[in-house]
Image 1 (spheres, one colour):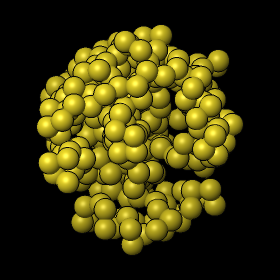
Image 2 (cartoon, one colour):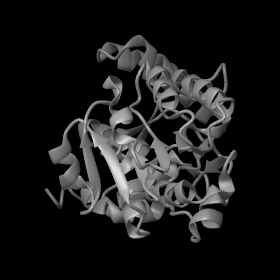
Image 3 (tube, helix red, strand yellow):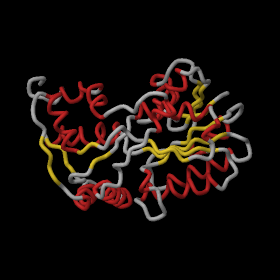
Image 4 (tube, one colour):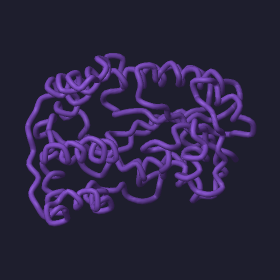
Length: 293
């Protein structure tokens, strides 16, 4: 069978493609920059150059049995995903959609999570074979793209969730689960909640980074409302600033602490820990230590 992957060159997509390649599944991706995609992805992956917003999925669907649905975080994310679902409807293509934090995917959730709720609702009623992966906060995003840049800029990690924990998941595990679900219909119709093995507080993450750096890392306590104000001051779109305020409030209210064993059940191995992720990416933190400099 052949799998088509959208969002193949972002934070999570490469892990999905790598896992598909490792299990020997013929894989096709769509990218606006085919040369970049080929440089990032394993050899043998078929690359279609095109833009999802311009209907590139239609041209890439011939011979495809399953679709991994992932599109960029955007104000109109749902519009694009619903258009893609319409393009594959009645073709018998299994759709595996990557969604968001389980407790916040609801009609009144944060902006992006409301969009995921809308797409999930349509997908369930579409008659299309599908599975939904509701993944908790990604380590690659929360640590690699938010905490680390803040630490580089200020020497401290902002903590908008107080003493709450996050059962963050490693993108590698998302890829491993997605690869299995894409080729096996036993999970059709299911919503699978993916988390790390335990909820981890920001304080623990800062302490571990401090060990890797060889120098302590302080937290600065802030509120979700302050996150919103800071983003607006930096020129973020109002919808995005609102989304981050709301999603951090969900986290602060202990809404992302629940843990599942779905990774182990589907991928056949325990979910990766925050400690293992930090160790694997330690060079990024060690580069910030005075001794390394």
